Length: 427
Image (cartoon, rainbow, N blue to C red; front, side):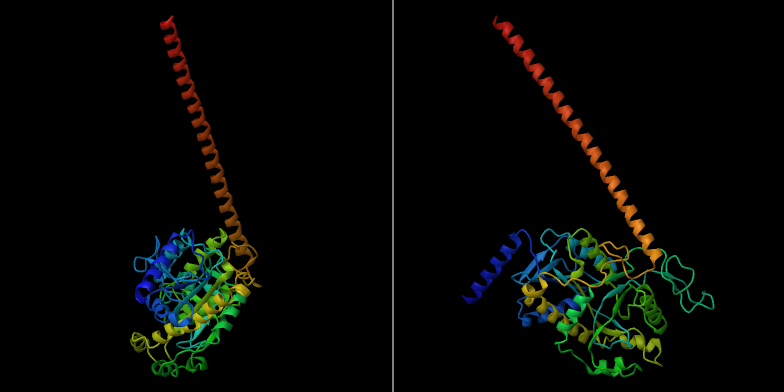
């Protein structure tokens, strides 16, 4: 009988949630692939925030591997898995953004995943909270064997003719800056978490000269790179560390490598521009699952063979959850007092275009000005096209009214003629 009552309660809860006009979660957790999602589903019931699988909400446009969004029974916390890689992540994030089921204007987004880790800033199982996400793969790639002798890398920013320059041609997704005040608040909430460690992960970390690699897993404030290519090796890692520093005007510090973050953030900044989400309510969290370069003296072949055993993936996924759930719990339980009104950022938030207002604090003035001019020009063209459409619609409306008036006139004249004939017949 007790089980039957629980089932009836769950069915009613689902019916009520689906029948409601919109669901307004306080937190939307975003995973990239199954191991990250499983960490949330396997552990969340112990959070005191409910069952994360209580509501299952299919949504059009999501990955066929992950076609539903799940929520707690009160819908205060929801979870979506967007799929691996930039394309899958962007497509699923846009489907979520445009879903008529959700009102996300006051929702906090927790982007939580595992990543490659820079041994100079963390170790396997370390958890990073980012201010910047940098799309380092958005560059020219020159075969280094064909590069000039004075080039130390084959990666060249778009519009440049040599390494280590800020791009003069920008797409808009190169750099995203998040709310540093919220990042710090999330870090403080997560500081109460206990992070897991493992013998094989410790043994691998001890092979590095950097003290941070040999230390136990901990929390760190540093930044993430986005590239669909898994890069491995000192040269590439050092180059993308340099790219991060240059593209953020010396502010960013690369520590985690991933595939999806800039793709999701591009969707969210577009949504924020249309007031569908609040870009100041995004927390970006990544946990180290593998090192981005081998230990000193270890050949790449041997390192890749050992990396295939994934010694850090399990503790990375668990620590992503251990730290992330503290953030979720803090937001939900501190909603009325703090988080409902939001944490107003002291720093710039958004993209290089300044899509959300204010002046970006990264990039060069010339590049920013050119990007903003292109944005304004594109906006002017959209407005012009909109005016043309409205004029055409107005003309079509007037013509339709004229045709309707003529039709009625013809009908009335015909009726009048018929009435006259009938009257003459009577006479």
